[in-house]
Length: 340
Image (cartoon, rainbow, N blue to C red; front, side, top):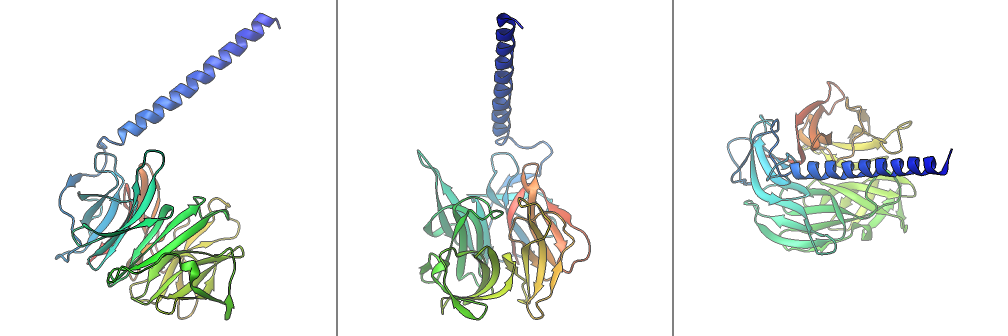
């Protein structure tokens, strides 16, 4: 092959790569721009008033992910019509949960060079009561049934629970006094009946039983544990192995959680299980896909959780007793909370 031919081939390759790269950038820019436009086939979204106050019907609040001007705003729909029109609040959150007239909203604060994050406690009108700096990227949020305690978890390094190279920070705030425990890793740990201390402990995924007791995940030594926490005593006690992102049922008898299963991909290791706290019996739900979420109980018999969708995430539901089949509950939504 002549030198001229080689140069011609090289030039053609460079031009082709450049065209591919330019096309990819333009496609990404076009798709990013579309996020500000209403989806033609998306849900109906309308601005209005969203309140946490009791009403005659049960409601479902979510972070709206439908493309358009109201993306990321907290939205409300009737619980019995989750695919119906959404009323959006104007309040934007990355993570959200609410109960008993109190909400926690984890937000990004956009800076010149980099973003920071904060946890904002909202009243029943979704107005700010108090805020706290958050040490990293928001990932979990919960409010106690009374509304007196709020909790959140952030990543302070790494960005996925799937591997081992990550660190979390979990905080609990009492909304009556604004006292904060900003790192649950300082609580006294009892593991397998013995006091335990280790440098690699991580705590995440709080779910409240009442204003004193909660459950969460403890990770240490390459294993995860369900722990029972006591806010007053500042203690964590292991209950069961291989539990992540627990969610306590309304009647306090069962925990829904992510479980790492043998043979699954290291990047998609979890299936959705339910643990009976009285018998310690585990039940696999009918959902066979990888679940990277803290499931929510929509009642004592049904779970709601997020899975990747065309516009971010969709909400799905499945019976908690292992029967039935998973079905899509709501498109373009995440971070659900039931009121009423």
